[in-house]
View 1 (cartoon, rainbow, N blue to C red):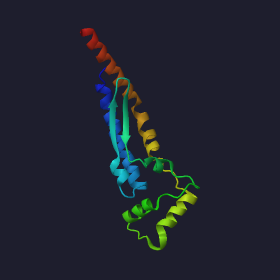
View 2: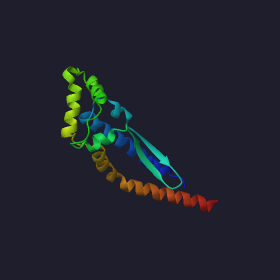
View 3: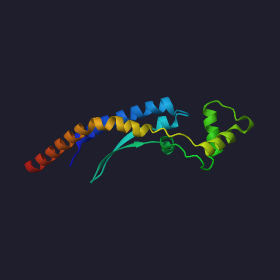
View 4: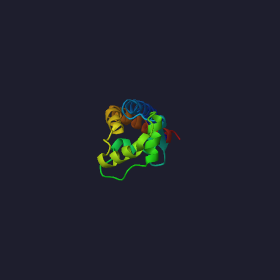
Length: 146
């Protein structure tokens, strides 16, 4: 079965989720721009599924879920890279101190992707249903006409 109508709806959803998620990152979790610049949506079609997914930097999950207090220290090299992006000099072992504080206190979650999906996807459930129905009708019509 071809999913022409569903794909059109998923393209709209994907673009909206991408743009709104990037807006949230820009206002609350923008450091180097690496996560922001990585946000892209993709539609995968297999024999059993049509999936809309986002391609993101691996550490998006750390932004989304935060980091619990009491975990081991994050790599100082990562902290230094972040400091460099913010033009913060690493004087007096500041990168080490930041890493230690993150280890002790953790980092609050920023569930931007969850918020974005919850804000957008319910608005399209009817459109998804209509697109699937139309695709199914077209597929059945093609089979009957053969």
